[in-house]
Image (cartoon, rainbow, N blue to C red):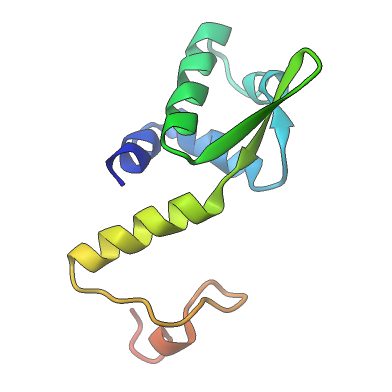
Length: 105
């Protein structure tokens, strides 16, 4: 959980995750969205991989990144449990769990 929150603490890494919500992208496609050096982006990718938030695979000379949403969900649920908030139902299409709609939580 600590690695996930460390990874999420940086706005560039959060933006990478946001871009990957649409589907897998190569390192070059992702790096093209930012005005930083390739080595800086490589460091961001390494932190995201270490946290398990993204997976990567080689396609020829390219590295393609995929979002690992289950790791993010686990980290957020673990954090919520620290404060006694137990999620018992899966979210619906709005992202709000059915058992939380009435309470506003």
